[in-house]
Length: 312
Ligand SMILES: N[C@@H](CCC(=O)N[C@@H](CS)C(=O)NCC(=O)O)C(=O)O
Image (cartoon, rainbow, N blue to C red; front, side, top):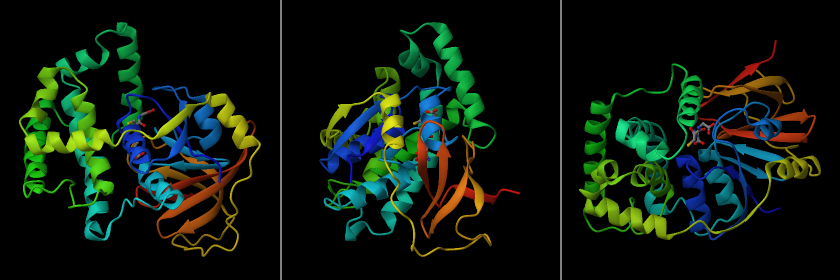
């Protein structure tokens, strides 16, 4: 199997979650830097419409959403595992909470005036305007919207709860072994930590949490080499997707393998991807599509958080 390619940009929290998992697993990977806002022509050539960050590409297979990307990296490098026995079940549940509730709380908290200043302070004002307009469209009406006082109140409580989770001196959130929850809880707090002291200071009041954040950061990002996004599209075009023939097919929609469908996130950034449904596992769905530039690709999604619709 070829080296995994991460499509990402430095400031993306969800990308940081994957970079840290790559570091934990000690993997070699290829880094493709993509734009922070639309348009992203090379991303959509690969996905057919999905625009969220990050994406993982392995040849002509494109994996969307970090919940699935974590499982793919686990398949590529089973040890060290993201799912140790002592954390079984709970680690995925805490990760789901962190990727939704904690993430949107951290975003609302970071977008207070002092946070925006430290994120965009040294860039031209048009840049922040374009970013805010892009994200308003991206969020639509479904992403949670907290005002700053509610975000501060919630964040304080969540940090206290995490501090309590670490109170017995355990190094990782679920005990002696690192698990998926460590990476999912880390990335929203990493985003806050990068900001000016006034904003990031809320973390310093929680000593066990900050020591744990240091431990996750110390795992690093593995070893990467750079590639241009156009070259990644060409690489997809010259590769063949992994065959899905003969895989058990879980039918929840009254659909047969090969039917034309759209797959779209149910929360925000809901741009649909159209193709032939070629994979339907309990935890993963995938469509095959043919793109002018990327050729035949299979685009994979986790089941949770996505909806499948038959194309009329
Ligand atoms: N559920 C998705 C969430 C990804 C997400 O919201 N990513 C943000 C960046 S951290 C994003 O896509 N922002 C808009 C963009 O990059 O165009 C995942 O786990 O990958």
